[in-house]
Structure formats: structure tokens, C-alpha cells
Length: 211
Length: 366
Image 1 (cartoon, chains in turn orange, green):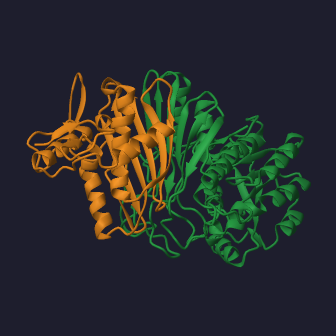
Image 2 (image 1 turned 90 degrees about the horizontal axis):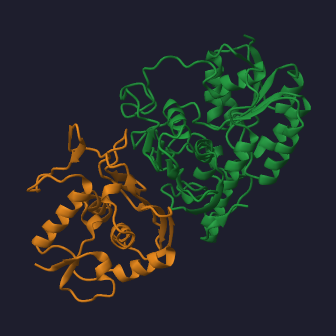
Image 3 (image 1 turned 180 degrees about the vertical axis):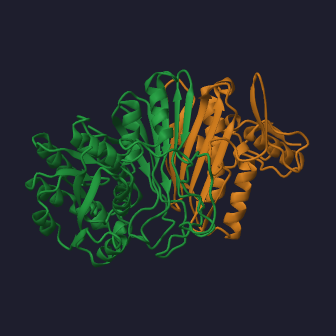
């Protein structure tokens, strides 16, 4: 099995002996959207919208918030858009892991990102993708409400958990982030994960120029 | 309570026919006349008022103003392009004035209307939606009362269907924006679409935060509807004047089948989600988080429309834009719920967003 490293550790590293934990690329909703792009069932991709929120107790150090979490979303967006970035604008709150980001690709696909690691600790993880095509869309955002679409909800006096369970998971995932991580690890185990730097150097450079 | 006589100047704004229909049900307003110069829109207006033979219809708003100079108010419901001249004409007759959506995308015209209003001895109000949506009203009350502490970030989507097939005038850059301005260098698309149609998100953010916008950056994706003349997508971010980051998506990305009949592809009319992160808590309000989801025959999109269908009590009369306007005329309110200044402030952000899309740069509002 290849070595697993975080994206910020992959910056400047080359070779094919490692896999980056670019979790969003392995998010089942992302994979589904990419399949629809490739088979043309939804038409041409126009815009991507990401909403990713976590309670503050899970907040990463700022460097990892930017160069692991944000980078992973930007990588996934590029994976589906299949084009080069022409712009990235990051609008970050001071001293908090909250940011909004806008990006454009050469093929005029846009990316909107809401990344928030400052929710109250009573909130579950939330991760949405909207892929808008000219003849359809793919999303896991429910028509009504704020939380994730389906799965299990379990609650007791200490709080509420939203659990993702699909047909191939051995262990249920505690929310969508864990779900992405499990799918990534499964692909690594099957030797189907993407190896090497991919476009991480360029995206990290883009982030550092934009922040 | 007194019932006020009102005339309707133009129905180019898709909301104008809705206001006409609602005012029929409101005991405070008696619609006595309406005007529309466009042939097709005139037919629409004629059909929608066919069961009200007492309403006089005109092709020229000036003629209507002259013949009904004794009415209490005029609702200016035309395309944005005509708003300024209609406002000037209405002032000549000393009408109380209610204007739809953006007062004008031309900021010089906005400032001139505000200057005139400041010495005008009648009332002027403006349609900026969402203040009376119960979820958003309650969210604001809790935020303003400090329940979630100081605001650290604010996010608002207003993602809707595209009304342009049914209202082609709404997709005409001149009628909508006021002039043909390319969206980006060498772009075939012009200003005047989804951004121009949605002034209320910026008003809602100002209403909730009590702050003004300081910086604006925006992008617009390739159009989902390539045959439109105007943009159907935008995403906007920036900072309020206290440094708090905001995000707005005011797009037309909820797909509908193309054609004059309203048939949804995406089954939800409008996503209007507010998310506010504070130092002591978090509030998320979904305009469509209603107790009742309806899908069935006879809705705008047969079998597929998820509509706002709330089994709620009838609203109090003041809890609506036209109710609040009547309260203003009664003297029970001293200021409009939303007026020219609020619309102008929204227009400034919208024009900054267009400038950012064109230049690729952040725009600083002065």
C-alpha cells in the first residue's frame, strides 16, 4: 500500500510512491457528478458550489485548513471541471476558520466555496456539492432544510449524530467527511487511489497568492 | 380603516401581476387603473384583470396619471428602464409611490430620485422582498437581540428559476439594466440578468447586520442558458464595513424547461438559505423550510412543482409590503419598510459585482 500523506505535506514532493488525502475527490457525490459530466447525461458543466461546515471542536490549524481542506476542495473542483484555474479569490474571517472563495477555470466553469469550521460543537458535519450543468444538476443538498440528505440520525442527551452508511462501507461513517475519508482509504487499499503530486503544487501556489 | 385608491404603471416586472392579484384580496387597496405600453404585456395585463371590469386599462402611463390624478398612490411595475421617468411623472401628480425591485441600475438616476424624495411631501416605498418572510424575520430578531453573539460570517443564497422565457423583456439588457454593457470583455452576454433581478439579498444582509458593504468580488459562470442575452449565474463575496465576510449567490440555476409555460426541471422554485455564524452560536434559515411539501396536479409545473404551500394563519395586513405601505399612508408608520435608499445601496453592490466580473478584480465601495 502506498504511503498516505496530507496535501500540505505533498507540496514540492514528486514521485508516485504516495497518495494524498484529497478527500473531496473521493466523495461519492463528487464521483457521481463527475460520471454524469463524462457521460454527458446532464449536459455541459457550468458551475460548482461547495458548502462544507464542521463544529469548532474539529477545526484544523489554519495551515491545514487552507492547504489540506480548501486545497482538497479546489483539487476536486479541478478534477471535475478538467480545466486550468484562471482566478481564485479567498475571503477569510480574521482568526477563525471561516472563508468564502470564488474561482474560475479557463472553460468558464465557476467554483463557489463556503468553508466553515466554526459551527457550535452541537452541530454535525455538513458537506454539500452542487454541480450545475446546462441540462441538469447533481447535488446532495436536500430540497428543504440545512443538514445532509439521507442516512441515519441518532440522538441522545449529549447531542445529535448524522451517520452515513452505504453498501460498501464496513463501518458506518460519522457524517460526510468521515464518509469521504473512508472512500479514500478504500481506494488506497484497492490500489485505485490517485498517486503522486497531481496538481497540488499549482493549487497550493494559487492559495498562497490569494490569501 | 381607509381604503386607498391605487393605479399600476406598467407590468414588465414579473412581480407586478402578483401584486395586482394580491391587492385584490387586501381590503386596504382598490386598484382603479393600470397601464402598459408593450403589446404583449398589455394583453397579459388585460387577461389578468378580465374579471375586474372596473379597472381601466391604458397604453400610456401619462394618460392614466392625468385621468386618475385623484388617486392616493401609484405602483411603478414597469421594466427598470422606465422607472426613472415614471417616478418623475408621478411626482408631478403628487402621488404616493411604490416602486418595484431595483429603482434603477443607473446610480445617477438613483441619487436623483433620492434627492427629490428628500423634499417630497408624499411617501415613497420600494419592493425589496424577504422582510416579511417569517423564518427570516425571526432569524433577524434573534441575531439583533444578540442570541448568537457578534456576527463572524454571513451567507445567503437566492437561487431561483429563470423567468425570462415567460417575461422576455426581463432578459432584454436595455429594459432590464438600462443599457447594453458586456458582462466580460468580448462576451456575448450583457448585464441585466440574475444579478439585476435580485437586489433583496443585499438589503437583507444590511437589514440583519446593520452594516454597509465595503468590498465586492464576483464571478459569473458560463451560462446554463446560452441563448439568453444576460447572465444566469453569479456568486459574490466580500467584506462588510466591519470586516465580516459575506457571500451571496443570486443565480437562475434552478432549471426550468424552455418555453412560455412554466415547467420545472429542478423541482424547487427558490432556494433562499441564510446562514449566520456568530461568536456565541449559529443560525440557518431556509425560506422553504415549511411544514408542508406539496406536489400534485394543477400547480405551475404539473406534478413536479414544490411550491410555497404553507398551512399557516392568514397574515396580518401590515405584515406585507403593501400592508406596510398602507400603514405608511395611514400615518401608523413614519418610514417605509424598504425605500429608495435601501434599493440604491443594493444597486451599488450589484454594480460593483458586475464591475468585478468584468475586471476580475475586487471592487472597493466608497
